[in-house]
Amino acid sequence: MQLIAGVYGNSNRDDYLATKAVDHSGGSLNLTWFDDSVRSLQVPEEATKLTLTKIPEEFPRNVLKSRAGGGSVNTRIAAAFIADLLGEKLEIRQLDAQDPEPLVVSELPAPTRWLGLRKCPRNYVVGNRGDRRIFRSPTEAAAPLQPRHREDIAWLCEAETIVLNGPKDVEPVAAILAERDRRRFDLILVLTPALPVEFLRHVAIPIADTLIGAWDELQFLTGKGPVSVEGATIAAVRLRRMAPQAQILVTMGKRGVLSMAAGSTEIIHVELSGRGGLAAEAQQIVRERPERLCGAGDALAGGVLMRRAFGLSLVSSAGVRRSRIADALAGCASALRWMGVTSPLSAGSFVIRSVPVAMAA
Image 1 (tube, rainbow, N blue to C red):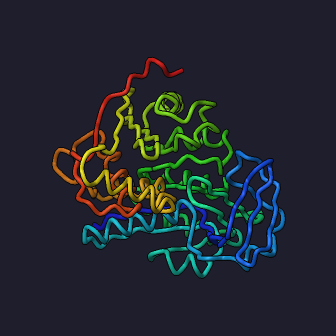
Image 2: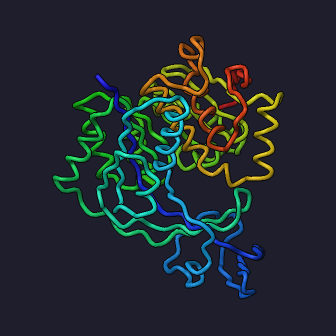
Image 3: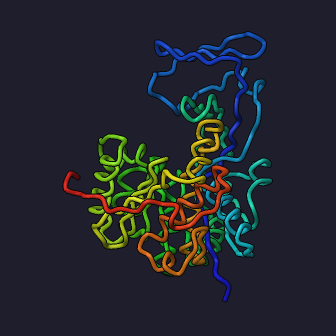
């Protein structure tokens, strides 16, 4: 019997703007185009993602490049990349909430189905990772589910392992969770503020097998805390209270990931070793091509999916496969390959240590 994995979420199209200069001061973001014209937008200093009621007419005229976007899209592409690297032919089903958008269709591996609940939104991206701003186009309300939609959801839920990454609508997610009551597939939930907090806390989180969240985004769910290893530890402990039996992974960018095995209160920190050519290569990419870091957290979810669904990992050894941190290592390896790191990977590429939890509130 062939194993099947599944991915669900909302795609979007990311258009990267070509600017001659970007200046952000006094709450005003000034974009200088290559024809020397300037567009000023009122943008708070701390804001990195904004939804505009109307897209400025200069934006479509100054697109440098475009790519398929959305957490689920990145996760699916990363999973396909892992399969290719390992020479595996696998069935990974993608179900997307949006209408099919030509660019997204061209970049997503088959098989993919589309619920068509709304038009695929478009994001306009300014700057790189450190100073990046994302301007979202207005998002339409989702259409209600019809019988044909439920057939597609049932198709997705034939998978043994499913990851939900970035879904924005309660109704289809609730339908997937209802299918899980009938067919006990392994559920990986990437925690983002796209869904209502109360729905996450009381419906989705309690039944997930694995929770994945980013240290700079989990505050919407776990409360205020610093973006630091200590803050991530606090977030992990608070997630454990919400989900006593789930595996918990808190991603921390270049600091790696915190891992709590299913049902455990022990926190393990998995971080790339600072020694050797692999670390030097990763640091060079961060300096010279910071845009490669975009989507690395979604790629980590793809690595976790591949290990849980098929037992596959870019970090391979018998000891790793049996390890309580096997998913964390698989995710970290996937994120590094997503960034463009080509140096050999092994369990010895990472520093693994226990983290005290006494400071967690």
